[in-house]
Amino acid sequence: MATKNPERMEKLISLAKRRGFIYPGSEIYGGLAGTWDYGPLGIALKKNITDLWWKTFVSKRDNVYGIDAAILMNARVWEASGHVAGFSDPLVECEKCKRRFRADHLEDKEKCPECGGKLGEPKQFNMMFKTKVGASEEASVSYLRPETAQGIFVNFKNVLDSFHPKLPFGIAQIGKAFRNEIAPRDFIFRVRELEQMEIEYFVKPDSWQEEFEKWREGVRLWVSLLGLTNVHEVEIGDGDRAHYSVRTVDFEYEYPFGQNELLGLACRTDFDLKNHTNASGVSLEYFDEETKERVTPYVIEPSFGVERAVLAVLNEAYSEDELSGEPRVFLKFPKHLAPVRVAVFPLLKNKPELVAKAREIRSFLSEEFDNTVFDDNGNIGKRYRRQDEIGTPFCVTIDFDTLGENPELKDTVTVRDRDTGEQRRVKVADLKDVLK
Ligand code: ATP
Image (cartoon, rainbow, N blue to C red; front, side, top):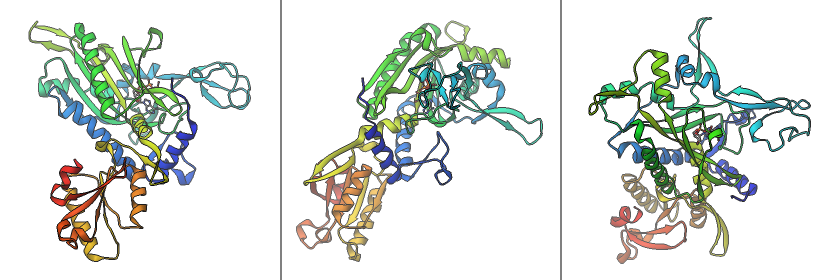
């Protein structure tokens, strides 16, 4: 079981804000609970994660189709899916201070954790954000989607008709989802506006158990690509699963505030496709060419939260050590996830020939790597520390030897490694390969 480390969490939140990863939402107006804004380095990290996911599970596979469905959907979708009636968490209110809590998260169900007052009876609180679509008084009710999955189910027939895939096949989507959480908390762990990466993988009903195990391996691969240690697979018992699931395995990570869900893997059976068939009157069956039978496929759903992945990757990377006798903080991101892949420095800011060469090498490297930066601010030691703190794996320094002051070292640069602080001389011609 994870040991709790609130001090580490504070350090992470403060570094994330100070260095431009993640800011509190609407901060100048005092914030809005459960919302966070990504800064330049935060988006770069998030994009590296979502791109890696897409590449791993969509582009590299022949039988997974990507879509991007609208966030606003016809309200009947949410009636058929069971969300209008049942997407709720138990809410309790303190009779004394009137604060509200999620009942299932409280250790003492009788007493208010804030003021000690008596707690009222739990009520079910629906977590969907309701809104209206259209300008007229009778504008129709809609909801901000609480999961991306339903956008996939309503496009099942479209993908079948356009691509004629054979079972098993998947439809994938990355996008925003919204949940009016009773108690958003723990930085970006529980937020009200989140991003999900979901796959609905349609399988023959009698093969769901083996396909589930294959996806369990797929999720393990993902966890290793993120470089995460301390992930635990937790089988969810009969009474605790979502209403549509016959099997759920949660992948839980040891966050600094304790072990909790990172992502979930579930078998949703034919629950969604059948409900949408009944409610819409449009058949969402699949015609099996071999058996000449119509079946409603079962679906295996690996559901990944982007915020929880970002938080786990940040936590895993956060490191403190001593380098050359000085304490430092650095983010040991896996190289493929680092928001800045390489920083390029001229040794001195006031030597135009060094600056020009450094800019030239930076633009040469940006042909290969998306995220490169140029920095000439302050002494080299300070620049290294700044890059360490945002997790840049390599810094490249251009000096007078690069320009040919020592003819033997002409067209070579110094490459400095984030984790060890070691420096070595590398030919510019070999630089891209060395950094790869
Ligand atoms: P929890 O039990 O923590 O509320 P859940 O079981 O309701 O989560 P799912 O409905 O399975 O979550 O959603 C799939 C994934 O979406 C989760 O594993 C998580 O990564 C992410 N997710 C869900 N709700 C939130 C949230 N409020 N904030 C951040 N990520 C979330």
